[in-house]
Length: 156
Image (tube, rainbow, N blue to C red):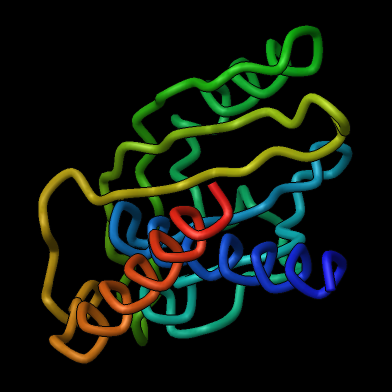
């Protein structure tokens, strides 16, 4: 039926979106702009070795970069846009703290100015530990793209 097809296509698009984000960014976060808490996260545990969901975003950001984030996100409240900003994330490891320089894309939400999406990619590859696109992952992504193309051709 039409409804089932729409649900299937939405699920495929969600999978493709997540796959694209995983290929482009080292991790992605959805932030609540009222208190700058992480609402949703993808790939965060591979970088920080813990889930950032529910945690204050700025506890993982270098103090000097907090103002840049505040400026970019406050501009988005007035007019949702896409911005790019350099952010250095902090990652604790035992008694040490590592600085992870990154380039972030911040996307404001037109329907809900109280949240934004943030995708982070490291300025230089820190380690294959953080980002390893395995052959199985790439095969799965390719298969999903083929399925989507066939669905578009068939319906299109």
